[in-house]
Image (cartoon, rainbow, N blue to C red; front, side, top):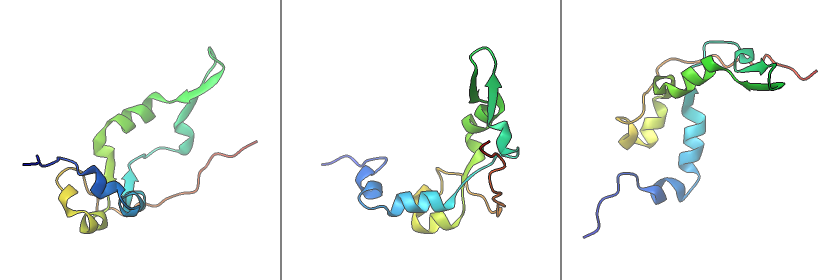
Length: 97
């Protein structure tokens, strides 16, 4: 008898439906300006991902899905946090000079 898979890889990768739904319904809570994502390091003369951004990125409470995602993939409702909040997506505040 075949063991039941925890994550049925083929089910979610066979078509682009899962990927499309993930991108459409995914939210990452980032309350700061886009300019806070990177910081300049004068020692290396490079920009690096900021410490505060990494703190938010490593905290999975900041990674959520809108409830409509779970209408398509209800089996994931206990594994991924949901948000009811409608987020206002601002245009990137950084510009190329």
